[in-house]
Image (cartoon, rainbow, N blue to C red; front, side, top):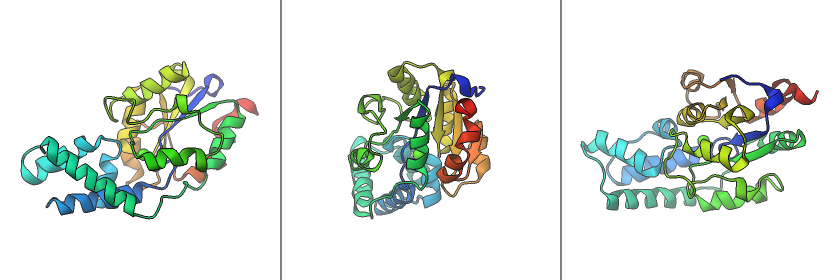
Length: 230
Ligand code: CA
């Protein structure tokens, strides 16, 4: 898909690893929860599964480690452990550069939206506190709205629907391979921001149209990226 800044109306931001520097905590929480249930999952692997539903991630690891899928009870227990570990870790900070970029996006008359597979209420509640006046709640897409997690395009298609814009009138900002895949599958130009430990190539091979190394770098290059107001 092509990127035509003159058509842009909405910018769809993923949350973990894009707006909040929370992926280190998720990786630690997954690693620790799996360990408690006798399964191996490296922190780096957590980045590869980022965006999947909890059940999807647990089943992939369970199949590999135990040769079978997890039962519904196990999924519930493991995911609860993961959430408990996550909530016991220090609160994730706002990603450096994220608020500044959001302010620029908004100042350009574009609609910033959050599209996340997360159901972590603690982070969702922090959005307004950390990004005051940026997001409209009714335009948010979270784990509570969608049936399929990323890499399914549903979350991004739902965001387009909520904003009443077409795929060529939006861009996606994602940090995870499966998130990039979801944005691309929705037919939306997808910007990868590589805030984690994976090689750039992993994100580019999923179809990212542009890659920045940080939200700060994206923010600093915003005027070049979106020249429509110059
Ligand atoms: Ca993410």
